[in-house]
Image 1 (cartoon, rainbow, N blue to C red):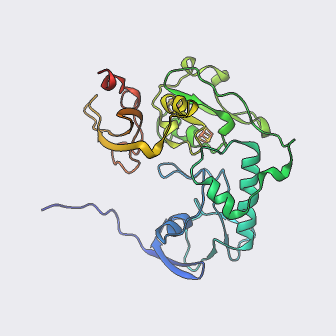
Image 2 (image 1 turned 135 degrees about the horizontal axis):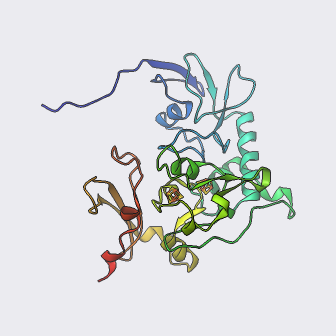
Image 3 (image 1 turned 180 degrees about the vertical axis):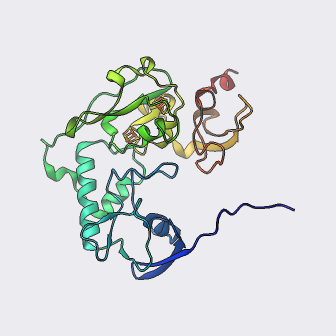
Amino acid sequence: MTIVDIGIPKRLVEFTVDGSTVRVPEGSTILDACTAAGKDIPTLCYGDTLEPANACRVCMVEVEGSRTLVPSCSRKAEPGMVVHTDSERTRTSRKVVLELLASATDLSTTPGVAEWMEEAGADPDRFGPDAATVAQPAIVDNELYVRDYEKCILCYKCVDACGEQWQNSFAITVAGRGFDARISTEFSNPLPDSACVYCGNCVEVCPTGALSFKREYDKRSDGSWDESRQTQTTTVCTFCGVGCNLTLHVQDNEIVKVTSPHDSSVTHGNLCIKGRFGWQHVQNR
Ligand code: SF4
Ligand code: SF4
């Protein structure tokens, strides 16, 4: 007999989203409920393996009786709550937030953002040519991954993945304030001189491509990166006995990057340097 662990039964919370009644297990967020109901709420800093950072403000929704808009990624559903995801206030907020982000950072490799901006009617150019940006050269100081901080929206996901939520290496954090705030190693040291252990777990969660695998970065730079020609195959890492799942992204019969399924009960998308980057021997034909 197979025994399936379905966890502790939870009470259902009933509330209203855009006029429809929804029921979700107690403890679910508004975003969880909307996702389950098939509603596409844009978000950048939400990570399915991380605690909500409440940083990007893209997923704001309106809750009747609440003075301000609330972040749907962290606000828990409550019985009787009346939520609007597509009101004038939410549309205005999303438009301005996307405009501010896109005017200061390069969102060209952020999946989904072009559609969200079009839908919201966002026009980042309206701040004029003198709008401050975080434009800067990409940092290529090792052979494994690249840090291109002009694409960084300061969502904190890499810091959380590197810190106490997963890796516990604490190699990176947010330094500076205001427009000078940035992700940094200790004393801005090059990555090889920092506490980084090259697990790549920060790259796994980065939503914008500010952190990218070196092979991907090189192929994007020379114009040969083509996701339509890539396959993804999930397999088990052979380096040790833990049994981490690796998803091999292959283009033209070459591994171009390795990710890991976020729903894996063993690793939740996290790997070590060997599983993440130790695949070159496979191609040494
Ligand atoms: S590769 Fe791992 S250790 Fe290095 S900064 Fe990223 S999460 Fe931290
Ligand atoms: S580097 Fe990526 S994950 Fe880290 S704060 Fe910037 S956008 Fe977020």
